[in-house]
Length: 272
Image (cartoon, rainbow, N blue to C red; front, side, top):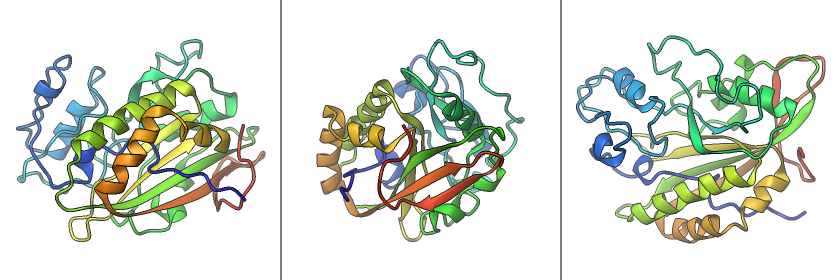
């Protein structure tokens, strides 16, 4: 059985795996003009992050006086093809009142195509989130709110999940890796298959982190490995991480059920 070599699911922003540092989002992203540098709470900072013109790859900083720790960021969903009916009309979101219900982010690039079942999953993943602060060391099926995500009864499909558990090397220069990963992420969306990318923040004590992505198929994930920006990101990752572990899972939706099943990847093709 051939293994799919993946240095990271797609793009791991350097600032998420390095010691906290202040960022001026207005300087990083002039189109938005939103400064998150001086926001007092996590909720306010995440709201600025979710503005429509904000670059989803730019991570804001949060003041130490924030009322709660930074545990994770919203899911980053690949933008839908223009010919999909709700490409410009995302699903309604709950009021932005808690980090447990953040608005999802979207990519600048759009998927070239998406099938009906994957579109249903894309909609459900707007509400994707971890259910424990210890997600970096928790088994994948138990780390996220899979039981809360529902798809139509008639849908039946499988998707391919890649999980990247890591700890950054002290003193590593993350900027080159960040730029390469950002380009690799957009490259993956443009070439098709990537539905969601999610990343956490390093555990304050262990430094461990987790990132994951969900693909329409294993073939799409394998094809992304040969793209130039992904190859560059793979090379840079070796020098940036003290340790990293890859896991692969099969995400299943059975006809007649609304809930998703997470199973270990046991070989063979997944999805299409």
